[in-house]
Amino acid sequence: MDVNIGRPQNEEGRIPQEVRCYDLLEELNIEFERVDHEAAETIEVCLERSAVLGTRICKNLFLCNRQETVFYLLVMPADKQFRTSAVSSQLGVARLHFGDEAHMERYLDLRPGSVSVLGLMNDRENMVRLIMDRDILSQEYFACHPCINTSSLKFLSSELFNKLLPKMRHEPTFVDL
Image (cartoon, rainbow, N blue to C red; front, side, top):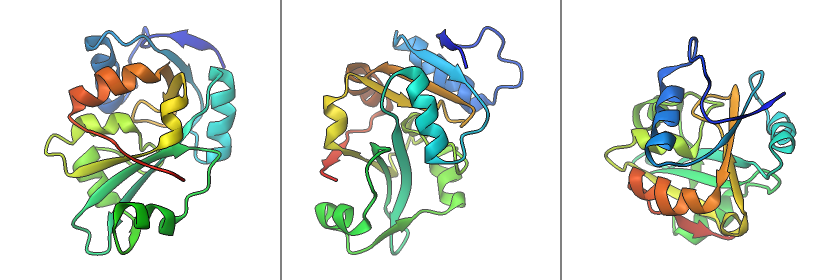
């Protein structure tokens, strides 16, 4: 796998969601590195990709409350374990579970396996609350998919917090996992 700077030269075959990610990053003058690869279907494969990029990659979990009226995107370091009770108690939510594909597509325009913080650009009505593990604040770089699990991106975490999230109008709530 080769590390590339910026968007692909040839975008033929790239899905619209991915192209919109590159457009947004360029609009905000966020420099990024990119690795194209086979579909990353498991977190173990994602960890291999993060080694190529030289940074810690995150798990992105689409969650909801029991009534499926409140939706969350949990972003956490891939090497940490997800415990529903830990997140639920810190958010004051009785019971969290994984959100279904229909809601994921409706609010984030994403398919399972390609969930990414960049999908929040599609949540114009702010139906999805962003929840992040506090450890992400201490990372120099942030890595994620560009709304498709066949590429991985790396950019400065400061760019995520100072440019990207404000543009997408999503303020993170931090939890300790």
